[in-house]
Image (cartoon, rainbow, N blue to C red):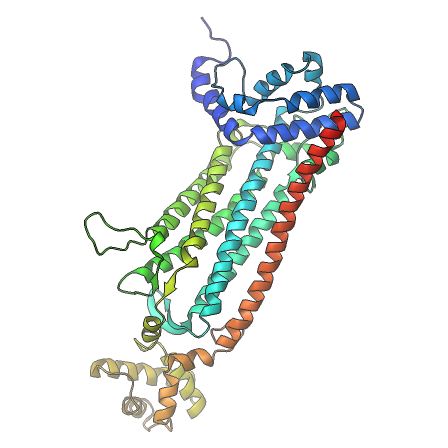
Length: 489
C-alpha cells in the first residue's frame, strides 16, 4: 500500500529535522513577516480593516513557547503550515486564510533567511570591530617596542610590535568593509516576489521592506527567489576573514611557545595539565584556530552545495543548507570574539623581543644601505660585502665588527671602507633600523602613530555604521509593533 505524504521515511529524515531547525532559527522572523505583510495588505485595501484587525490580533495571540515545545508528528508539513493552523485557532479560517494573499512560501522563506542572516552578520561585524579595538590598544602601547620580523619563518629584519599589530588591524579593517558591503547587498527584501513572478494584487513591496528594516526591495522577482549571492557574498567575506584570523592566531601561538617567550596570556585563557604541573597551555589560541577552521569548512561546504544547482526555486538552498550557513556565521563569531577577549589582557615580553631584534644579523640590510650611501657604491657590491661579513662573523662566533667589515671590503673591493666604527654600530642597531624607515607604511614610530590615527578614524566610521544600522533595525521593529497596535485599536 502506497504511503500518503509525508511518508515515514521522508518525515523522519527530512521534515522532522527541518522542523527543529525552523523552530530554532525562524519563528521570530516568520512572525515579523506575517505582521508586516498583513499591515501592507490592509493599507493597500486588499483586505478590509476588520479583517486586518482580526488577523493581527490572532498573530499577537500566538504562543511561540508552545510551538517550540511541539514535536513533529506529520499533521502539518512544516513550520509555515503549523503557524497557519495556530492563526486559525484565534480567528475564523476564512479570515486567517486571507493572510496568505499575494505571497508564497518561496518569498517568505528567502525573506526570513535574510532576516536571520543579517542579525548574525551584524554580530560578527561587532566582534571584528571589538577585536580591532584591542589591536589598536596594543599598538598604542608598543610604538617603540622593537621586535624581529620574519619571512619564510626565518628572522628577517627588525620592526616594532605596533607595526606588526597594525598589519593585522589593517587586514581586519578590510574584512569589516567586506562584511559591511555584503550586509548592504543582503539587506534587501524579496517579499512580494511571490512564487517567482510577483502577484496580480496591488501589493506594495517597498512598504513591507520598510516595515522589516530592509533598505529596499530586491528588484527582479525571478532573481529574488533564484539568487543565492546574498549568502555566498556574505560567506565569501567570512571565509576571507577566517583565513586571516587563522594566520593571526598562528603567529600568537608561536609567540606563546617557551622557545619564543614573546607573549603571556592571562591566566583565564590558559589551561593546566592533569599530569604536568608546570604547564600553561594557550588553549584559547588553539580554540580560536580550531573554531575558525571549523567555520571555514562550513563556508566551503555551503559553496560546494550550491555551486552547480539550478537557477530557480530549489530545496538545495533552503531547509537543509540554511542551518549550515548560520552555524558558519556563529562559529566565525565565536573565533573572532574569543580572539579579542584573549588578547585584551595579554602581556608581551618586550625585553626578549628587543634582544631577538638584535640577533641573527637581521639589521644588516641597513648596514648595506649605509655603505651605499656612505661609499657611493652600487647595492650589489654593498650586498656582497655585507654578506661576506656575516659569513666571517659566523665563523668567528661574533657580531659584524669593524675589522670584519674591512676585511670583507678588501676582499670585494680591494680597499677598505671609510665607514667608521660608530657608523657601523648605528647601522646594525635595531632601533636605528626602525627609526630611519619613515616611509609611508613603514615601522618608524612616527609612521605607526600616523597609521594608528588613520586606523582609529576608520574604526570610528565602522562603529558609527554599526550603531546606525542596529538602530535602524531596532527602530523598524518598534515602528512595526506600533503600527500593529494602531491597526488593532
